[in-house]
Every structure is written in C-alpha cells, then in structure tokens.
Image 1 (cartoon, rainbow, N blue to C red):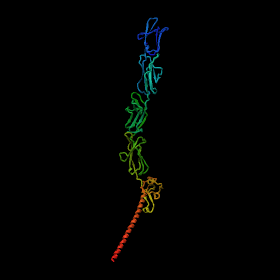
Image 2 (image 1 turned 60 degrees about the vertical axis):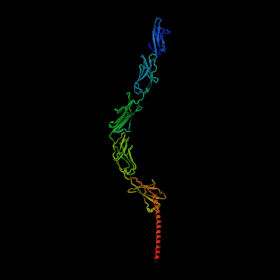
Image 3 (image 1 turned 90 degrees about the horizontal axis):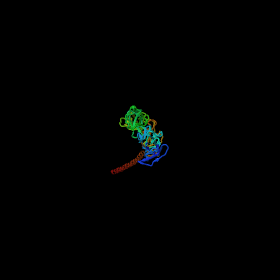
Image 4 (image 1 turned 90 degrees about the vertical axis):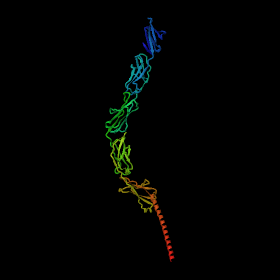
Length: 488
C-alpha cells in the first residue's frame, strides 16, 4: 500500500484473521480478530510508531502473508506569490502557488486569507490560486494547506504571505506660472507630481492624444521658446519602471500661444486739462486684457535704466514739479529670463507752474505808529480769475469767509509769535495756488518798538545837542562882550 500519512485511519484486509506485527526484526504478540468471511485489522489515528511489517496466519493454510506499513508526517506546504512584487496595484494579476513536496498526486488545496477560506468551492485540485484583477479588497495575509481526498490527511498551515495592494497614486499637473496665455518666444514650464511617489515611477507627457518624445525621468516639461504650434491641452501620467503599469491621467492644462511680442498701451490717468506743479499724476501701462504676471518698467526720454519697476500697472508722480516734464514710456516683463514686451509709445508730460499767492501788509508804515491793528492782503498776481482764499496761522487753517482777501490782526486776539500765510482757491483748474510766504506779526511789532524807541532817543539826542550848541553860543557872546570892553 505504500506510505501512509500520520493520523490516517487504515484498514488491512486478509482472508484470515490471525495477525502478527514485526518491528525491528522482532516478532511481537500476535493480534487476533475473529470475523465472518475475511479478517480486517484496523488502526485508528496511526502514528509513526505504527510503522512495521504486518502479516496474518490463515487457519486453512499454514503460511504467512507479509504486509509492510510505513507511517510518516505530512509534508509541509510552501506558499509563494507570482510575480513576487512587494506591492501590487488595482487591476494587476497575481497568482498564489501552494507547493507540497510529495509523490502523492491526490492532493487538494485550500486557501485562506486572514483565517477565512478564500475558495469559491470547497477545495481545488490545482495548487495555484489566481486573482486576475486585484482591488483593495484583496489585501491581507494568506496561507494554504493541502489534503488528500477521501482520507483524513492534511498538511500543516503554510507560511504566511502578505498581499499588499495600494491605490494608484494621484497625478497632479501644475503650471509654473499663473497664466495660461503665452506669446511667441515665452518660456513655459509644466510640473507633473506623482503624489507619494516612489522612485519606480517615470513620466509620460501628452499634448492632446499625442505622446511627447521627452526624457521620461524628468518630472518637468519645459518649452524654452514657445510658438503657436504648441498650443493645446497637456496631461501627464506615471509609468512603472518594472512592469507595464500606468497611473491615471492627470488633470488637464490648456495653453494658448499666440502672436508676437505685445506692445503695451500707455493711457494717461490724470485730471483732464493742463497739469500743474503739486498735482498727482498717474501713468498706466497695460498689456492686453490679461494682467497676470507682468512687472512693469518705466522709462523717461532716452534713459537706458528704468526709473522704477512696479508689480502694478501704474506709475504715480506725487507733488509734480516742473522738473518732471518730459516723455515717458514703459514695457513689461514676466517669467524666467524674463520675457519682455516691446516698448510702448511715448507720452509727453507737460507740467505748468502753479500760481503763487502773495501776502502783503496793507497797513502803511505811518499808520503802524498810530494803531494796534494790522491788515494783511492775499492776492494771486497775474491772474484775472476770481479767487477765494484760505488763511493759515502756524499752518492751521482759519475758519473765515473764503471770499475775504484781507485779514485784520489785533493785539487783543492775536499772538505776536504767530506766522500767517494764505492760499487762493477756485473751482476751475488750477483749483488752488501755492501757499504764500509766511508773515510773522512779531517782526512788525518789534520794528515798530524799535522805531519808536529810536525816535525817542534821537529826539533826546537832538535836544541835548541843541542845548550844547546854545550854551556854546552864549559863551561865545560873553567872550565877545569882554573883548569889546577891554578894547574900549
């Protein structure tokens, strides 16, 4: 009968019923069984110690019929994966193979995942269990065991094999710039990010349905100098280096490449009409209708270096002066390099000097000595227009009737330390004048005091001199009289 697996139930049939067991060449006590017809000797749950040579003695015939019985442990089962990847991805095929090193060919195979049977039927006659298209539900720890049909024989559990199934990594395509409309000659850089990627992924690039012939090891696709033929919809995906496995496609990015270098427009965003000193002037430079990414450079007349560069499209001159007169232009640049537009047309900026307000002391000098008040007058010289006026004391405006062109200062309500100035205002342009020069009342008061004091001192001096002259004359007369009397 051959080799019997351990713990099997064995029946040995013979036409007689007298049995003997010989092990290690020694005859043992015979085992007897009396039955009708043929004799059967049964061994339940055989173990290795039951290995021996058995024979029976027939009563009818004085001869022995030997039978050799060998009992061994079931061979081990070994589980392997084909292919032997450490990580699998959805839709891939995998085969689990259960190997039992035995000459027996009646083995049937049972498959288990996390302790539960994975067979669609009770068992399989083949030692391979194939999953044609993996998904995430197939993850787990697998093992197998073998058994012989019709016999209570089974192997121990095989080794455990962990089947790892990961979702394909998402792929994100980004544009290095925040604009999608480009011009001929501009640089374009796309970046493909296989998120959570390992080094086993390379990159495939597409414009529309056409694959682009580029280095697949690079995660960037760069167009150094774009032209109109490179307009289109771009995508990317990952390819596994070790097997024919693709990620899903990335999001799409639509690029448009058109025309030659644009030319900025330079409108003037300032008050209408003539421009005056102290005005705020804003020049605006715009490239088409898409402001994305442009940095503007401003030039004046023939200067090679730009006046300034701004992220916005405006250049503002605050407190314009006559020195700001001239022709202005701009151009814009963006991206790496950078890419520059053409120069705009020039714009001529004319600045006219703003009228000056003139502050004068209207009180005559002769009146300064006779009154404690002073009258100041504000006027715009050389202007026939009608003006209103704003008066200031120490830089703070005074709440006065704007139609008044005169201001009266009195010692009762004014400080001698204050400085006064004025400015003309009107509705038409220019809407205001330059502020006049300051007038300090203290200077007039001091001058008046000095003049009065000087006049007083001069009067005293003149009186003293008159007295001296008179005295001298009187002495001279007395001397003449003496001489006369002497002469007589």
